[in-house]
Length: 121
Image (cartoon, rainbow, N blue to C red; front, side, top):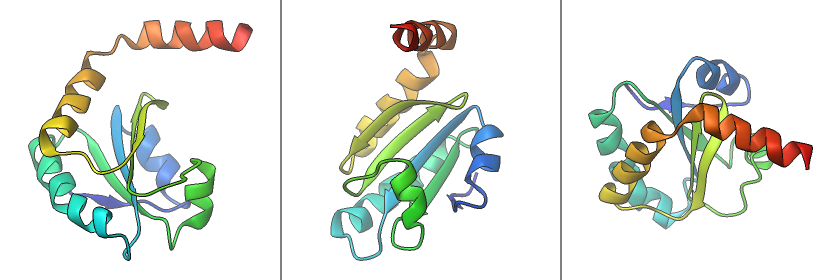
């Protein structure tokens, strides 16, 4: 699947339509973002069942604020409309592949139960 440019107008549609979404929050002036780009693209080619999206934080400042992005690059993983991973900084290809494997292995029923417990407390 190709990498999709996410905007405030289309992000909800894309995320809700995907079991797993991986979002790269970046900016054109950011050196580490530019260095991470080819890694993100390479991993996306190996996992065509996952939505890979990029959010240009310069053009989509409101979206960056909504996701509480404080530094870039920031990588965020959403599974079944629940954020399960968020980390600033560029990851090497092996670490990104590991994040994907751990995301796939999550018991989402258990995740939902844990969220419910936290909200009840």
